[in-house]
Every structure is written in structure tokens, then in C-alpha cells.
Image (cartoon, rainbow, N blue to C red; front, side):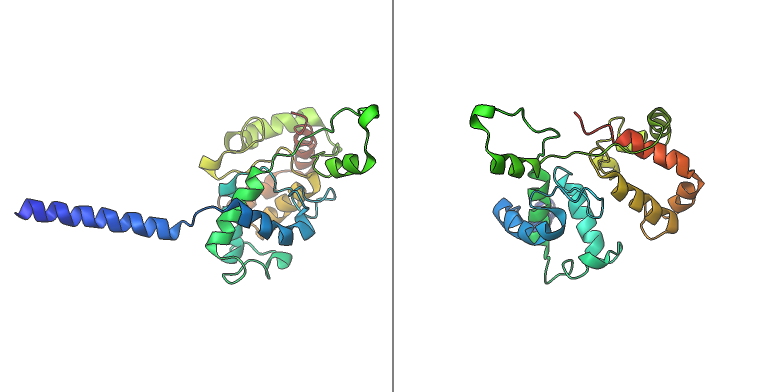
Amino acid sequence: MRTMTKNLLLLGLIFCAGIRAEEETPAVDLELGEEINETCAGCHGEYGQGSIDGEYPRLAGLTDAYIARQLRNFKQRQRINIPMLPYTNERELPEEDLVSIAAYLASIQLPTKLPPINEAEFDALKRLQASKKVVNIAIYPGDVEVGRKFYRKECASCHGSDGYGDDNKEAPQLAGQYSRYLLKQVESIRTGDRFHEDPDDAEIFREYTDAEITAMLAWLATLDDG
């Protein structure tokens, strides 16, 4: 009888834990995510493409886990960005909305090149609309080969040899991100305004020379042609 009672209690605990987990992880709603994106589009673009001047990052195609993690950091004020403050609180961005917008942005796959022009069917408006979806990272001045070697030594173990990140290590994709935005993030880590993997990494980033960072950005800028 005692064994049966223990087993029933164990099953009850497992069942309750399962219910609690479902409650804590809302279902993803891509239609809701698309609706929420209308607010995000004012800065990050209709397709999550960001801005070429690097003021706003590209979000399209980043993993939903990474996007959700950063949004939670904004909500918990572990990461501070003034323009994000009005949108990242529990009233404006409950967990259901958060996971849905993260999944929606992650689902957007942007091309790196426009298709060849078909003169017989050319439509200027459609061409303009298509151009908004293209991720085109401008060439960044710096020694690409030095940057490749620096990246392979200092960054590849987490962010991947191809710059596409590793969610298991909470390392975001760097390939296809705007160079000026990446530079701003490096500076934020150096000053301690943004944490890297560990708060102590700020000291490591300060040890990197400006020439090394510039070279790394120059190399990363070549990785959006895949």
C-alpha cells in the first residue's frame, strides 16, 4: 500500500509539473507575432531587416531563443535601451506576445541578393518592395584576412566558424548583421553597459585593439553572400 501511495504521489507531482510547465510556456501564435511586428516595424523594418546605418539591428532570421532571451533581458532591465523601454514591460509585452513575436521574426528568411531582372515582366514597384527584403551588408574598411584569423581565434568557438551562432552557448548569429550595430555592441560591452557571456568579459574586450575589432568587422561583412 505504501508503495502504491508513493507511486500515486509521484504521478501527481509529475502531472502537476507538466501543467505548470504548459502554463509557464505559452503557445506560439505566428499571426499574433505578425500583428505585434507592426509596432516593431517602425524601427526594425517591416521584414525585421533593421536599418543599414546600424542604428537598429536586423532581427529577421535570428533564432527565436535568442530574440526571446534579449526581450526578457529588456523586460527585466538587465539590458537597457531607451527606445525599447516603453515596449518591454509586462503590460505591453506579456510572455505570450514575447514568444510569438520572437518566433515570427525568426521565421522570416531574407535573401542576400535580388533576383535577376526579367525585362519582359519588370515592375518597378515590385522591385522596390523586393529590395526591402534583401540583407546587404556593406563592405567594411579593414584587413579581412587579419579579421578572419582574429575571429577564428577569439570568437568562433562560440559564434561558429561561419558566424551563424550557437544557441546552446547563447551565442547569437553575427553574419548578416550590420557592422555599425556590431561595433556599438562591442563598445557597450567594453564599457560594461551590456554583458557578454560574463561581466568580466568587458576587460577582455578592452584588451582587443581597435584595429583587431575593425578587421573582424571587415571579415564578418563578407559573410552575407551565402
